[in-house]
Amino acid sequence: MSRAPARRAAVALALLLAAAGGARAVQPDEVLKDPVMEARARDISSGLRCLVCQNQSIDDSDAPLARDLRLIVRERLKAGDDDAQVQSYVVGRYGEYVLLRPVFALHTLLLWLTPIAVVILGLFGLWRLSRRRVESAPEGLSAAEQAEITALTRRD
Picture 1 (cartoon, rainbow, N blue to C red):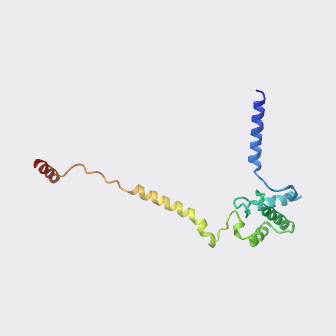
Picture 2: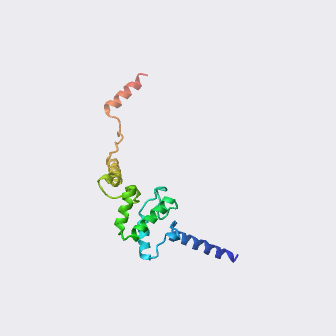
Picture 3: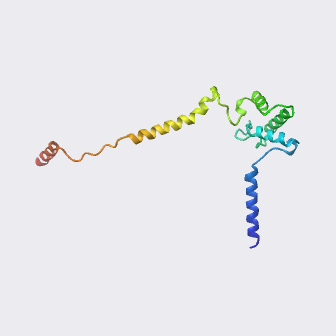
């Protein structure tokens, strides 16, 4: 019975470390010696898409192409490029698809405005539904209708 709290603590610690650290695929031989440059490299890498995995950053992917991209980022930083130059170098080589966060430009306007248009159309539809008037049922028969019913029932 004394092992149960220790196991719970170990599981909680493992979950906490996994949630805090995230899954990183950066290998020890890729890490730069300068911690400031390494932080810049990680920041840039977290915004670049792995072209193999497609929904992971190159920082999180184990694919060989992601490793190559991480090395390119670090080489460009060592060469003296700033963050924007490194990113534009990678985009120039692989296209804008490599960016996890697309740029806001004329050719991506539809991508950015579609969610807004969907929300506006949904709100408009809800507004139209709320404005519909419920037709009330007739309260009773008119005198002419009542007379016609009684005339029809007397024939029998």
